Image (cartoon, rainbow, N blue to C red; front, side, top):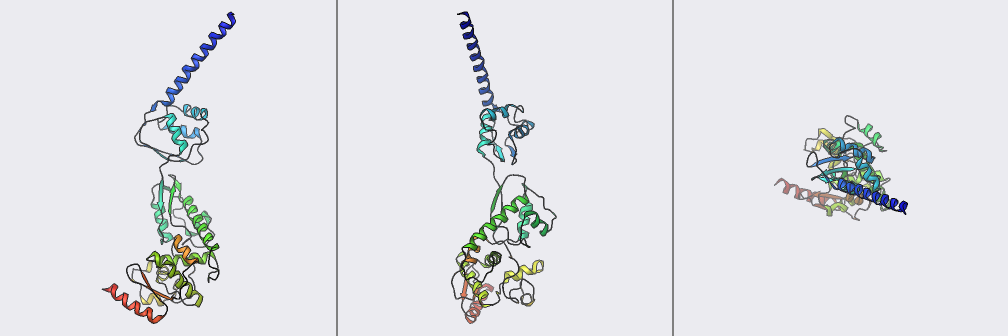
Amino acid sequence: MQTLKRLFILLLGFLFIAALVAGWFYHYYHLKIVLPVIPYEFSVESGSNVKQITRQLANDNVLPDTWSFVLLSYLLSKESVLKAGDYRLTENISQIALLDYLVKGDVRQNEVRFVEGWTFSQFRDALYSHPDIRKTTTGMSEREILRLVGVSELSAEGVFFPDTYYFIKNSTDVEILQRAYQTMQNHVQKAWAQRIETLPLESPYEALILASIVEKETGLDSDRLEIAGVFINRLRMGMPLQTDPTVIYGLGDKFDGNLRKKDLRTDQEYNTYTRTGLPPTPIAMPGLASIHAAVKPAKTDSLYFVAKGNGESVFSTNLSDHNRAVMRYQKQQKK
């Protein structure tokens, strides 16, 4: 009887101590941490484990020690589901709320935007001017960058997809380049698989070249398919494409904003007035609409078009009508 009584007292003592410990843990983990600064921003890099995260936060005087947060994550079986990203805390927070925050991955998004019609030079400028992107290709040549990114094409022009890309702070320029390249590859390959079979294009890369020209020539979305149709008709007939943007691209830094007759008559590899067929590379980054237009152009008899000056184009099936349209709209633009 005495033994049972002693065991009962020990059990009560154990339960009392356990309750005290549980109460202490509950209070400790729900007690709000006083942040060193508000807002407090920190980054969790991809591949970081809970011990590394805890050490980082303890060094910043956010966590009181380097063990309690690790213990909490293991007790709740959440040590392996913490998400990488950029975090921003705007008020004092408890350890358990912080753990939940990291599990949900309520991150602050960084973004960089690349615009349809940009050249690779403009793409690169936007990439390097972003303060949250780590630059690892500064000073490298275009060929060196292509090799590092894993691009099979010989030119960087037009092979990166224009879009808004979200990333974790301190992501490298190479990581974003790889994403943009793979996105373009996916779009072009998918569009090529759905192309009109009779197109005078021999490869997805040729479709990309045409799409870049359509992108630079389109002032109004509703004209895009018709413009692509004009270029397809010219390619079928062996007519020069005679498109100013390719000539301007070929001139490079020599172009001063004024395209002259001399420029149209001087032969160079991007002069589609002196040469038939497509130029050797894209001349800009085409958007998805231009890629689709290049592989599924409008069925049209038009061979010519001229810009009206308001973004809209006028299409003609013969040179006489085209010349009249040119005279009419060029006069209007001069006025």
